[in-house]
Image (tube, rainbow, N blue to C red):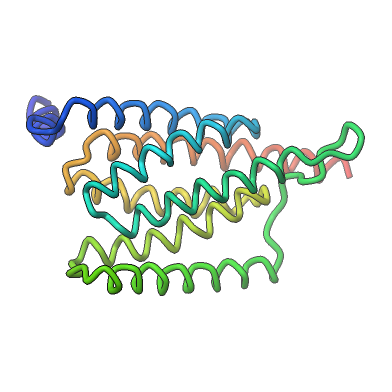
Length: 210
């Protein structure tokens, strides 16, 4: 057990205090954001924006361009999701939880491939030497980009993509020495599984009443 604590703490021994504080704030708001998403609560977006804005800065100073690019996108998509989730006609919200159609699955595949290509180009533009972890970055960027789009449109499949991406990211961030972010994604995974179950129950209940 002590070795586990040492693994996480070693990375912070020479880290400036303000960075540790920022990472802790991002950690708290990130967990809150996923928790609110599980509850289908619109507060998922303001809390998410705070988390991603801080994370963009942390990733920038650590030169993780792929992840940084994705978090900029998350911030922009959060604004769209905030607007989309809040749309109402009378007392009824216009965007209910639903499954992806064939067309939306195809769009998701296109977004996944296009995002990986753009992320790769960004690395090349900055003359970044690509290592295995950067290629993993490229793949998770595609997964999370698509997941965020699905979430903004309340598609159940967003949770499946979050779970896959989170499971990949946990060891990646641990390897990079970003212990709190690694732990954050572990919590994200648990909440994402819980979110999938909650949204599916909601969807099944809605289908039964239709």
